[in-house]
Amino acid sequence: MASMMQPQIILLKEGTDTSQGKPQLVSNINACMAVADVVRTTLGPRGMDKLIHDDKGNTTISNDGATIMKLLDVVHPAAKILVDIAKSQDSEVGDGTTTVVLLAGEFLREAKPFIEDGVHPQNLIRSYRTASNMAIEKIKELAVSIEGKSLDEKRSLLAKCAATTLSSKLIGGEKDFFATMVVDAVIAIGSDDRLNMIGIKKVPGGTMRDSFLVNGVAFKKTFSYAGFEQQPKKFLNPKILLLNIELELKSEKENAEIRLSDPLQYQSIVDAEWNIIYDKLDKCVKSGAKIVLSRLAIGDLATQYFADRDIFCAGRVAEDDLHRVAAATGGTVQTSVNNVIDEVLGSCEVFEEKQVGNERFNIFNGCPSGQTATIVLRGGADQFIEEAERSLHDAIMIVRRAMKNSTVVAGGGAIDMEISRYLWQHARNIAGKSQLFINSFAKALEVIPRQLCDNAGFDATDVLNKLRQKHALPSGEGALYGVDINTGGISDSFANFVWEPALVKVNAINAATEAACLILSVDETVKNPKSESAQGEAAGGMGRGRGGGRGRGMRRR
Image (cartoon, rainbow, N blue to C red; front, top):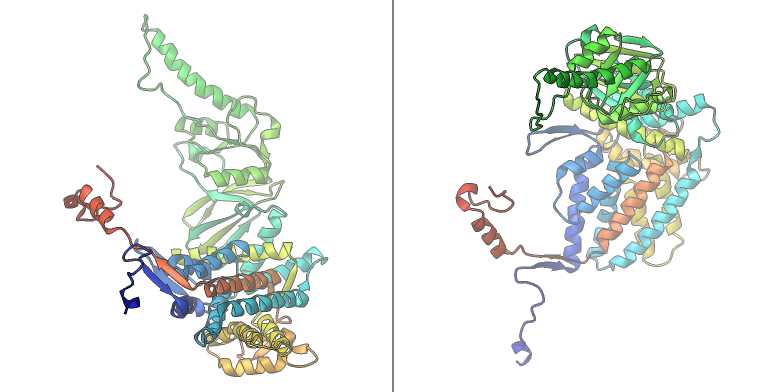
């Protein structure tokens, strides 16, 4: 009776939501599985696309895992971890974002029955980490290096990697066309790590096949004044002057005060203003440049002045375009026109203004440093071109990674099946519970080939049985066999050039294991209540009549 009279100890603020123990862990696992199920159908060459419509009325069509995860606006705290690993995979490798979310979801799905049966999460985590390390070692062992090949061989090998990435995208029908374009662009920028040296410009209209690569810089014609049409639109081996100043007639500021004793002196002040701008323009002409680009405005007077002297000019050029022109032509952006020497001028073989669809583009070809490239994308709908740009970004990242870490593995679920078989075999030599946990890790890896089959409409059970049988051959000849998307059977992925950089798989398994272990290690969630009184005061203080009662976050008038 005395124990019943003990006062209750209150640790946390009233209304705090605490969930802990096994139910909490299972709830987190269910949330992550739900997120994985959203992107599940987008995997592979036959993956479906998602149409996401946000509250601002913007519509996005995509099958890129990272893009979908960003746009989903997930609020569940545990499921947000999957969004983070998709983002990290996208920024680190560029491709495999759907794979990493699927693997993490599947690891947790396999762990769920063990958790419900009372297995301690730390036992699972320990086994998962061991299995992950073994899987990564096996990938490195199976990877084939493309180092030491001639440039032409390397080019075709990189194009195969790009084509594998693009096959699962919206532009998969033209994957060969775009794969060579991406490889040429990446080789053009050489060892330069900056991704912004490859520009992607979007022009609605035409077909995908009308897209083209510029070995240099291309940007849309900027806002122009009268006199622009009188300027020449094509030059051979011109000198290029890059500026970051305004070439406009500047009248005195309105609040400036000038006192004159003689009205005739007024004319000298007006003349001084004109002389300043004419002096700047004269220096530009004397520099010998035939093309003048500026980040700031080039006014109507300057446009006409340059037109009379057969010089092309463009003002208000976007900053990243100007920097790309500087990198490509070997010029330097100037903040003054005084003392313009030859060393700061850029050059290119051909400059021309060209009509692309409804837009006019300024195109610099044959640049000396050659460390830039621009892809001009064409297509029907805006959403389609947006998705094509995202797809090309993934392919560019993959080719860059493949050039740096030049090892590739067989795609199409082949590498996943081989690691799975390797872990099953290894688990037989382990005594105790961890044998079951490593087996569950191995089973989870089979989700990739299974999902590839499901998304293509094949019988996954049948294809997986064939794959298991092939990979179990003692000679090891079946190690490169994966799902054949075209026939619904199995084939040698490596011979069919379904390749992906080993780094993609290593990163995906690493990130998915880390995420699964992180979620398994959480056994309590504490949710602090929002202070209702503070909200009430804020709403009252802001004037309920004006905001319809929504006081928080409103601006004071």
